[in-house]
Image (tube, rainbow, N blue to C red; front, side):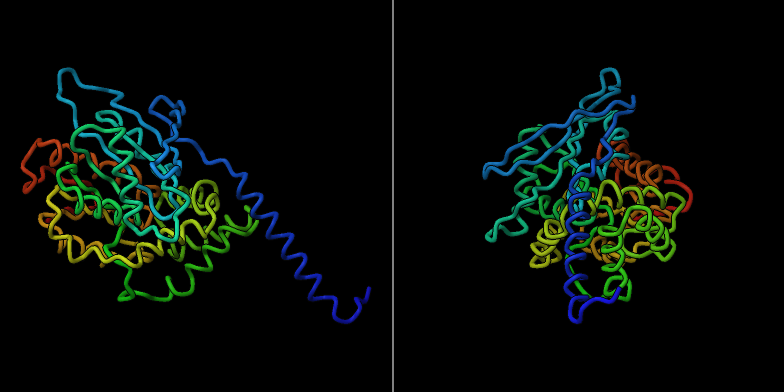
Length: 342
């Protein structure tokens, strides 16, 4: 069949529009795997409405295994990264909830043109005010770590501890390479918009190359599953980009020295998306901050190496935040292939 001259491009354009619509329809219908407790049961989801009318979903759980007459331990509030979904912490919530109350919330989807990065920080303050009492611990992953640091700067008296995972204090271009400039956007696009089977094959290739959020760790398949069923596919890129754009106008470095809470900086040494230098910079600026490597992992070490990640975090909570030992002398070997130092 010979097409009339000048009709091929319109046909291809129409097919592209149809394909794009089908992909967006598929992505909107994806159901994220729920957060479950140690008993395997789904933890009930709640909704919270901020003072400006925006709603977010969140879970509250714990302590599920309280120890006798032990005093209540500080609650912990989990802040996700730019994609903004609470389910990114599905491997942390059950472990953390054994001994303390855990609040895990998604980020707001809508930001007005007038909103700054502090809008996301204000949201943490508002929801924490309704779900926690007294001082609490903040755990932030990637962009969530920046939100947590800004919170600790603004409300130091409310923070019992600060755990920062694969985060950064400002968006800079000191360590930009081929990964961030060229390969990461391609990996994002193939993950979001290709058929699932083909996207999975490419995601495994990205894992081998350690591009974007992917890594070549033993648990790399968890990151692949996250990307396909929980993370970037389930949130329009415009939503996550709007959050990042607000942060690009912020530089936390001049105020990091004012953070007084015990601080743990967790880092995947194979993270090429937010390189380790960003974490070392934070450690050098936050007084008394401790640094811990999650061996063999990359940007999503809380997913790919969740057992190692949780072990480091729980030990720090027990020995530093909960006051079991002086925080200048952490006890014991944190685990094979890890490093903890001030």
